Image (cartoon, rainbow, N blue to C red; front, side, top):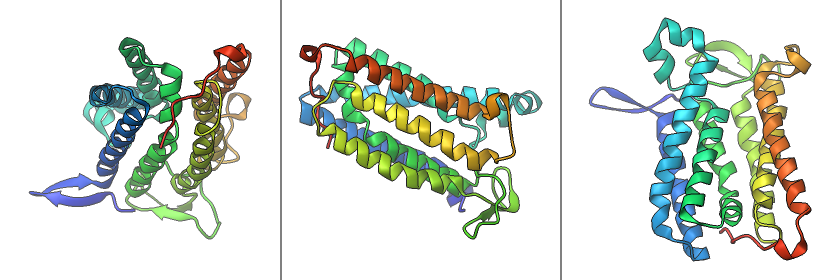
Length: 259
């Protein structure tokens, strides 16, 4: 792990923060090129990206604070601003809601745009997880496997060997990306690829939480909160994909191509 990338005038610049900025840049470049290729108004990319990023960050921060409410009450500044206390599901919910509202307001083809943007989602998520790995947070449960790692400067620190679940998720994003890229080039109802992204991301998170939370840990239904949220995400994908499959053939159209 390498939480501090460098220092400027004695102030540390965190690797995690730099990777978040990189993820935004990658998303913006990809969205701009997709808009140009499909003939959509590329001038809307920057304001749309700014709104979605701001909403996703706010949602991730607020949901992260709710998950660590006792820390927020004891130390509000640390609880609200700690770099490791960001929630994927909070950011996903708020960012997605703002994206849908923006596309609707701009009168852009919502399903086609969502499909065209879907392949970049696992890339962005992998970059985020690399930031978590370098910061030493969101690691897994103790393990004796040879690739287990310790995070003595992590958040929180641990000298025990644990599952590097951040790396697991980065590896799992590769087949997700390849599948979405193959699907974006095929004929399908607009919105299908986006719903398939929900299914794959939900399934991936349910699986990885086994190593993150530990096999012996149980809750309602023997699932932890993140797995329940991932199950909801996957269910949304399944329901959406089923709904599209029931539409008349004349209403189906190919989504705008990605890259």
